[in-house]
Every structure is written in structure tokens, then in C-alpha cells.
Length: 334
Image (spheres, rainbow, N blue to C red):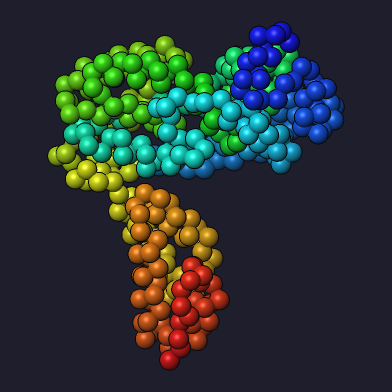
């Protein structure tokens, strides 16, 4: 490893790794097992398919625990020490990406949303290799690290390193798109594969759409034209799923209705099998709308006062034993 590479690594504060032996020491695993993880990836991933909104299936490749631990180390000790562009909103530690993203666009009249097709699948093992060489690692270590973070030649959906690597790979894309937009008073942000542009002038957005696609294509990606959408004050505006009304941001109304429905079912049927999911959904909405958690606590307190529910010993017992929030008062039986 040359002096310049050492200087880069020291400046970033990432581990200095020369060869397979020094990497195995950093990870506290044997060289043989490390070699297996990096060269026999098919042995260390589990594949699953989940439905997408459009009815198609999304394929996930989740690493088994041993590989996940290694990837987590790479993420924390190396990747997250390299700054992403200021236009990257998703998967950035300490940033409430969805909320911050929507806030940046809420005061503009017109919004253009575009989606990158097969985002992770467009980022190749070679791209990841070059990323690690830019960080300062030699070819051997960069190749091993790239192998540990890719599957079947691309970034896998399901690996803990994939989102942050994608952000770093997209640095140049972000800077080129922002340069184009800043000259035209257009706000640009990227939330993973969702590109958002907003302006008070619809014509400006129309005029740059072709240029945006050309830049995206030049950076190795393709826009999914079926998901390109324009919003204005004449209709419901959304940015990466966050609703904008009268320059205020809100979580999706249907999501909030679903949360209330789940809470009512849990309490009235004494069925708290989805309690963790309900708490997670409430926390998500509360991260967008301050005070939503308190609203749902008041809703549950109201349910706890309903006479028809208090007459059921089963309902009362289940409510008191499985409180969605610990600070709720007990339900008093009739």
C-alpha cells in the first residue's frame, strides 16, 4: 500500500488493511472462513420474494448471520466514515430522511418525481470495487471487500451494506443533477431510487426532464418512465410517500386509518399479535407528524373507557397485560 493510500485511509479514519491476513485480524475470523465468505457467496445468502405494490415480486437476498456481521463491520468501520452527498436523504445516520426530504419540497408549487429502475441491480461488483479503491484500499483488499458486499455480481437487496454503498456510488449522479437544477432554481433530492425535483415554474421542470434522463443514463442507471409523475397544488402532492397540503407535511391518510383499525382490533378482540407492528407504524407516523404518538395514546385511553369493552374480562385482562404504551392507565372492569 503506497503512502498516498495510507494518507487517505488515515484522513478518513478507516482501518488500514494490507492483505487477507490483516483483514481477518480486524474481523476476528480465520483467513479460511473469510476466503469462503468472499468467494462462495451463494452459500451465505437466503433468498425470498415479497410482493410489490404493482403486483410483481421483489427478490431479496438476505445474508446469513456470519456474513451479516462482517457486512455490519464494513458498514460502520469503513463506509459510514465516508460522507455521502448532501442530496442523499435515505439511509444516512442521524437523518430523518423521509421528513427532511419532504420539508425541502413543501414550499414549491410543482413537483416532479422520477424512479430509477432496478436501482441496486444496476450497481455492479466492479462499481463497488472501484469505490473501495477510491477510499484508499489496494486492489486485493478492494476486491475482497467488493465480494463481501455483492451477490451474483451486483448489490443485493437485503444486505446491510447495500443502501450506503448505493449512496456513495451515486455521489457523482447527485452532484451532476444538483448542478443542473441549481442553475434553474429547482430543488433536487434523492431518497434511494426516488428522485424528486420541485419548482414554482412547471415549464422549467418540463424542459429539464430529458436532460435529467440523459444524466441518469450516463451514470449507469435508467429511469422507470411508468413511475414518472407530476404534482401541483391542483391535486394531492406527495414526495416519497409523504403528503404535502398547504405547505405542511403529513403521513398518508390511509396509513393512519389502518393504524386506528389495527388498534381497535387489538383492543376489542384481545388480539395483540401485531402489537410490535402497530408500535412501529405509530413511531413512523410520529417521526413525520409531531404529536401523533400522543394522539394514538388518547385514542387508546378512549377505548379503555368504553363500557362494552370493559364488560369483557378477557378484553380487560388482555389490555392491561399487553399495553401498547407502558404509560397508559389500566382498563377498569365493570
